[in-house]
Image (cartoon, rainbow, N blue to C red; front, top):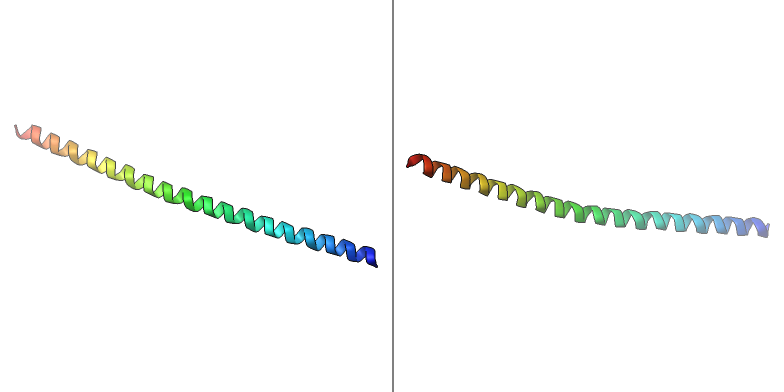
Length: 68
């Protein structure tokens, strides 16, 4: 009987450690995903703003050159 109790304790301990490890990995994954998303959105915004500025500058330059 003591042998089965020992086996049950070991299985329970392994299960708890596995669940804690999965939770830890999920937390790290979500944190990294959050950081990547923040950087990605910021990069998209910067690229979009830069393209908009370039397009507006080109239209202004083309508009000025066509007037002369």
